[in-house]
Length: 360
Image 1 (cartoon, rainbow, N blue to C red):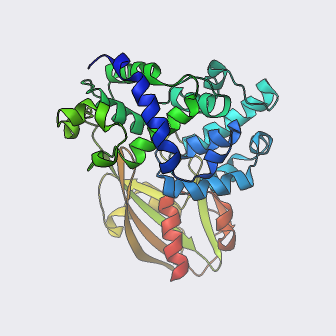
Image 2: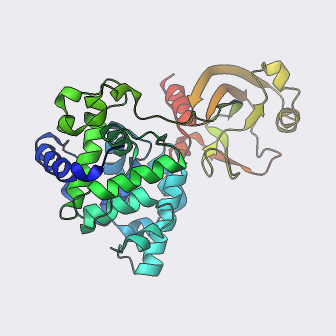
């Protein structure tokens, strides 16, 4: 990697000249409110802007400030978050809001280390809040910025390695404009999101083309390098949507697993794809259904749901019964009116099933 000092001043000038004419018009860019900036940054983690936009609008409409969020129930927060995935983000935000109320009297701290002390807030989010809201010279390094820096300076270390992350942060800290850190960070992120794309980057439109080492050496496609991800785990879920008139059963997932604290139908997880006859041999199946009569099982749909390190293969069965079931032997289930199911936060997988179910 060449000496970054040669290009620091040029990069800042080029970025800040390009950004005002090419930035996307997004609501969180019209505010210096640290709460709104925090909400937007957390929502946009692992989320496309197109999807995150609507969630941001709904979230701040429901929880317009720190106090409103801190006083909310976890179920209310998860319900607003439903379908966005990575639900630990929402749970952490709720805890952080309580921290802000209890430790900082409901006022967002401007100090980087204090922002970093909030639940779920890492270096990137703390830097974003510090620079966007308070004008502090802390460089934001997300996936987009990592790609830009990697190509600008031909960073050899994989960007997801410890060495690579340290190097990228070091370079980002060197090239940030201390006078206008917020604009600089926004411009770097926007460049990565719209121009310096993972595939088919628009080098001919890039304002940093003249100072980009990878472009100069015709090696853009070689950067950034990454360590191969861990193996994806396959899981097999069999859901039972029990129906008696307008009633059904739900259970909250409380284990440290996917979709913690979200609700779902009775579930039997198996080691592979199995038939209903094979599932009927499972202990849970006998426990739930052996004492009931006139049950009708109908396979409704098969669904595949992709998570970061898991693939969920789900089978949905409707279980119709003419007799009322007061409770399931497993007391963790609650009986609800189907009309009230919208009140319960569920995973995107269950939500997709319900969308299909209500259409039919």
